[in-house]
Length: 294
Length: 342
Image (cartoon, rainbow over all chains, first blue to last red; front, side):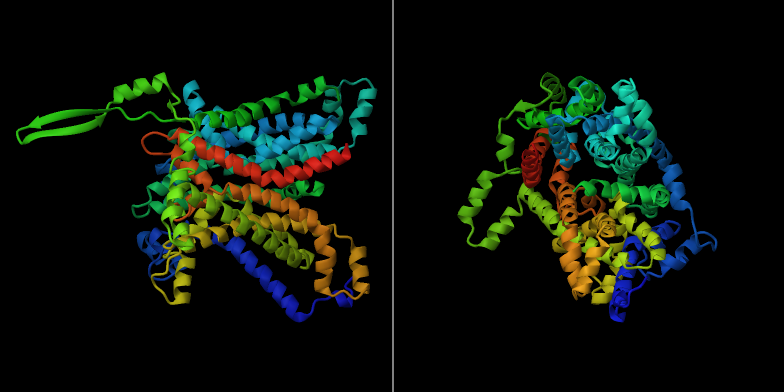
């Protein structure tokens, strides 16, 4: 019900609409532009002559018998430079990181939420400090021991490290989620004769999925977006997507190679795009979950 | 919950964190006391019909033996911390002794790698964080006043800069600000300067990185504030209106105080995340004019011939100390709250 005094004066309305439009362009245009440009030849996407070339694509037309679109970048990245291998590796890594972090995180988060002792507070504070550690400082602690133990360069090592780095965040998030599930639920199950673990399995697990899905999304993002850990702990041959893209940059001096990187970047963005489309609500609620507690 | 049950639930998680977060911190501290072996040099003389040449080469076999014997390198005490690529006490003394004015001191300190990185990291942290909060708040207030039909799509597109991998987001912008890219070309046309390049001058590179930081993190602040705005009690807003508060006064005196806890939350998260700024420097290939502490560690570990573990570890430890100092106010507040409760 619009109250007259709540209706905006015209200049303010124009100003705020304009502001939103500018923000939208700033947020979305770079991605749309790059997606469009990834189907062009380098001479068009990086045009010395005229920026309109990136839209109309005269050089692309010349190189491709009149077609304004080319898949050369994608072919180069996925087939010639074997980007598919990196894509396969990142799928393996993200899958296991999400599964393992959630398993450890739900157990730990549940315990933290239900135990009333003083040390849970300290554990959470320590987890907060751990959460703030720049990942590269930890990586510099891993390298020597990993070389010594000869476990450097394997996917399982990377998965375990990512799970561990992810734990503080997962614990915080699931801890605050379990606090929102009433204690009575599992306690009445225990009164009925369940052990603590049975109560967790039979009474809590069936109602915890919304929180777990949200936390899982963020675990996925951490593993998928990671550059520091994967680039330092994996060899060039079995690396994941993001380090692979950065390795393209080193070899972009030749004509056309930079389009490999552009195509690879777009390939890395697409899954995230789909993710936001399906899970927008969960992402928003996850971002604010920590804030609700203040 | 009894201690035993608690432990049964939490041990896997605890073990992972101890093994891969707590122990590495100590291992970093230990590593920082060592430096890589000095190269064992052998001088060989090769004679050819045109005379003899002395050649100095690294004795690879001897180096390998040394590395196997002492994989950590040789003991150096706190030497790594005070050398000129870290805290550089001698260099600083020298600078203060020989320089005439403040500008000269500043320029010389900016040439020391550790201080250069520290200053950039701190500037990035303390410039980007407030901007993100202010900008995110404005976007949230404006979006909140839109018709609900548009809210979903606006939120969808707003999430993109934050969700997309930092390195990838940085690259996307980097290609656009290239002098042959659309933003770079537009800026050249705008200022009528065909040689203008955002990559050329250090100042412009810093500004670009800050702008990237705001672009990347504002959606986070926006989403949190937007969710907070939904919970501002309508009664209070209405009674403020009855009291004659105008639009601005309602935001200033009702909404803002109500959202203050969220500001603290966002500031905390942003300080932690911005302090480890790293990927944009790679994405923007900005290492020549801007390096961060994380980048220093990365480049030490990536040193071309053999990784400089000692140097990286020393920088890491200094960074960790920085993180703890940064978190100190939060930890103290939590500690006080906790004591009040019990």
